[in-house]
Length: 110
Image 1 (cartoon, rainbow, N blue to C red):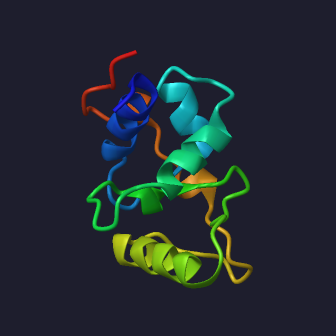
Image 2: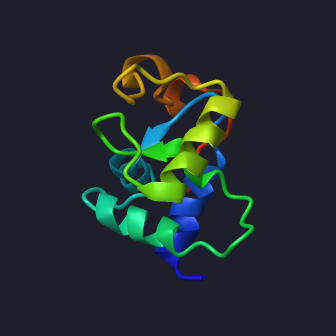
């Protein structure tokens, strides 16, 4: 696994239940600002059955970027996690966005 994947997976593993982060946030925290699309692409290639909480990563508009059954699976996982959606299908980033600087868990290496 290359350094990029190692870094983004390290960050994603730290997102606590009931919180979300954006593709851009993950890229920035992993030391790759501007690589949001690469984060999305990497998550799209996760092996089936991965235990990485990929579903806690959403777009910067507070929406799930996936469609069809993948959208439903991500939405259900987030609901199970305690994340609520607006009537329009959005997640309040103000309420649910993960702020690792406020979380006492260890930070990923840079």
